[in-house]
Length: 158
Image (tube, rainbow, N blue to C red; front, side):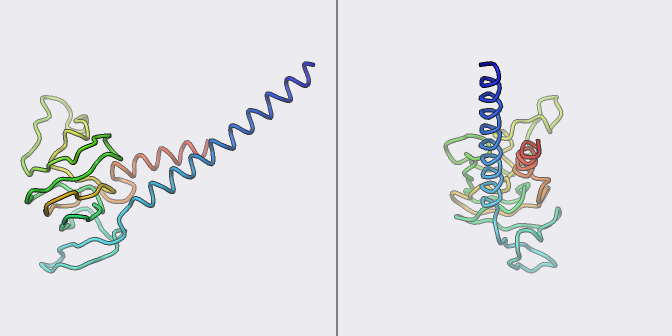
């Protein structure tokens, strides 16, 4: 009886492990699919459309309604700009963006919750309305969504 019980527990544990690994792989793939493929940037004073994976911090990105944000962008100019950040922050309504600096209220600015960072547009979120321009502050795995993707990959590896 004990041998049968031990065999059953090992089999169950292995099955659960395989299922969880598959779920983690699907989550990582879903995050990858959320990323933008192209972006409009201003380089040398000229607007051009480039693959999103060629964006680097310091680039100026132009955003419009329906665009997927290609990187984490500090907004310099907004015109009725709102982004859908549900996948990142859990907010169910679009977040109106501003250009003003955010007061960290005496704490480390990096500790400000993502939902309160209204002067930033985050990679993989969708522009719900309006237009704007901003400077890229993080791209690729250094974005907020990239951090989540890295954590998912770490779970996958264990």
